[in-house]
Amino acid sequence: MPGKILLAAVSGGADSAAMLVSLSELRTALGFSLHCIHVEHGLRPPDESRGDARAVQELCKTFSVPCRIVSVPPGRIKAFSKKHRQGIEAAARYFRYRIFSREKTRINADYVLTAHNRNDVLENILIRILRGSGPSGLGIIPKNRGYLLRPLLDFSRDDILEYLKEKGVSYRNDATNTDTAFFRNKVRLLLVPFLNIHFPGWQKSLYSLGETQSLLAEFLSDEINNKFNWEPEGRGFNSALKLDENNLSNVPQILKEEVIFSGIDKLMNNSGIDIKIPLKPPRRSAVRKAIVGDFTGDLGQARLEKKNSSIYLRHNRKAAVNSGFALLIKKPGIYTLKCSLWNGTGDLRLTVSRNSIELSGDKPEKSELGKLNFKSFPLVLSMGGHKRPISDILNARDHSSGIIHIIDSNGILGGINV
Image (cartoon, rainbow, N blue to C red):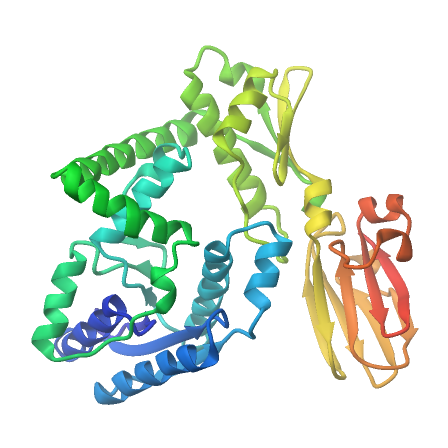
């Protein structure tokens, strides 16, 4: 990788410590630059999380690796998890990878490296089996996906511990790794030891299953890309994807399901909406039920409908608006809200002074949205997800139609119909 810039995500645990040390030893011979990013999630007692951060800083200092520590305010991930009805692990991962992406941009890195190992691959498959995943979920973790690289997937946790012992490198033990309240820890601490005792050889068999499912997922993906074309209609939350029902006649049930999943992924990721919450895919049982129900049903953030001879996937406005978003403004400045929520492309620009906010947008009819006066900071731009009763803010019809509200300490200043 001559001339490349690599960003190593290092928690301070054994896996990431081994990755950092091995990369530092290879960088001169292979000609790449190495940086480190460490995320404090704000989930553990400060002494523990700060101890991890200091350990990572010391390790980076020892091996002459530039290091950046990013801290998530305590309570934010838990609040996010509760609001979006996701597990703590999923919410933490969302924050972590968002920070990785921003740091990659900041230092102009080519790749972000994480320290997943072979044990993680097996645990991941077990978790997905218990959750009823399809072929892509049961496949092995890929070694690369876009700018993400996972260089340790061929090594077991025992291999990694042996390497650290050989190098005389210490590492941190996260106390939460023993907490069986987390689903992954249940699998790692309870299920895996049971399998090791009673089903020797299970790891090779499960890994083989993962390889088979990866091949199946690749085949299904190729079939979908070659034979099923979801046609886009509209923009933002009014966007939809359309498919001729005849395309799904006389095809196997599993292919029908995968076509719907591919459409949901396309709808959520190519809608032009830049303000996003992490997508929680619908359960396969819900997709199966909707297909049996003449291609009609709610699928979490999407809705499947059939009209005449066409099948439509639309944004489930109720789910999206209830999740909502908020932008907090604490001081004067120029702010840009990148958003296609208003039935088209363009940004919402806010010029904020000490007592007024002027709004303008890219779309012609939204270019001059007016000027509002306020008494004090902070200001909040909010759509859905209000903590106050909806009756205290606006009527239910306005809420469901999609209004971005501008709120100061005294209440609502105004709204933008999107």
